Image (tube, rainbow, N blue to C red; front, side, top):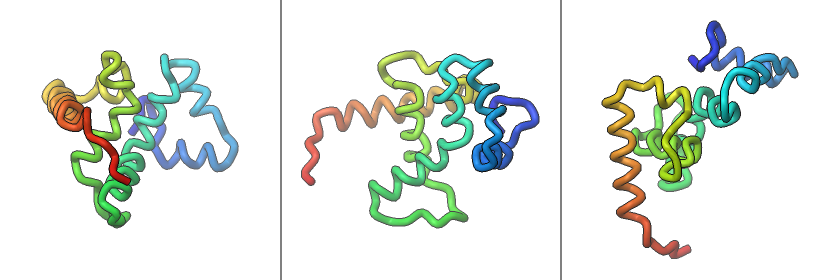
Length: 120
């Protein structure tokens, strides 16, 4: 639902399409690192879908969710992880068990693939 009260993702997208930028302004005015908070609220699913499609070469049908791994990976760029403690509001609002699970997945992914060389 996002971090702004009474604003749905659909309303946020419509505001961009219609040139009504008050929602983005409100993010800018009220949150540190507003762009990453905005993307975490409204585009994390899109990032996960695109990453899964790129990685697997298979389209994720619009009526299906991306796999959990790709949803977890979507947090990487938004949080600048592992370089800093995650400060994204949407991440902070997750239950502690979910935050810990995501961080374990990301740590494992980074540690197990740190020295992997791209072959293409």
